[in-house]
Amino acid sequence: MINYGLYVMTCRGNENIDARTVSWLTQISFEPPVILVGIHKESEMLGFVKEKGSFVINVLGEGQKEIGAVFFKNCTVEGSKINGYETKNGITENPVLLETPSYFECKLKSIFETGGEHIILLGEVVEAGINNELPSLILRETGWNYGG
Image (cartoon, rainbow, N blue to C red; front, side, top):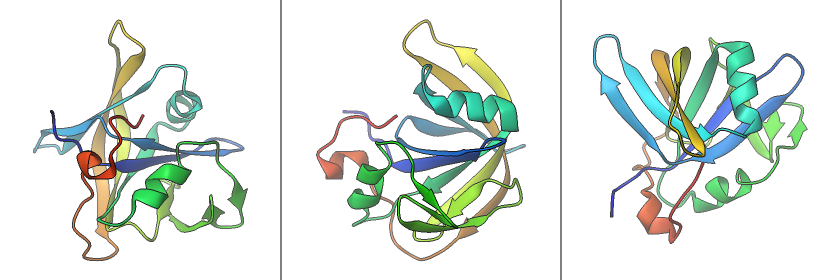
């Protein structure tokens, strides 16, 4: 019964890109702006984030359930597209999805073990942007109960 948004987390490693749908995310500080995101500790994303020291959170909008669905599986990168969706490089040199309403780029601050199957990443927001005016997609509206 906890309300979650739905997001696609992206990161460029030294040789590959990973992008995954996540839902366990919240803001924890205004100054500096910091977010907390939970990801599976066996996710390839964790290695990419540790290597790069940064990541991007792309906020999904209403009607973008299909975008969230394609990022539950492994990534296919063709040129500037990930799983068929166009990207640009952000200031952190990580991919930013152009079809999502908004995004924020984060510098990794800390990693915390939870004792469970997920770990917590703290990211300081170093850049943010708006691509369009779609309202945010809420996980409950998709019929799913988890993404991450």
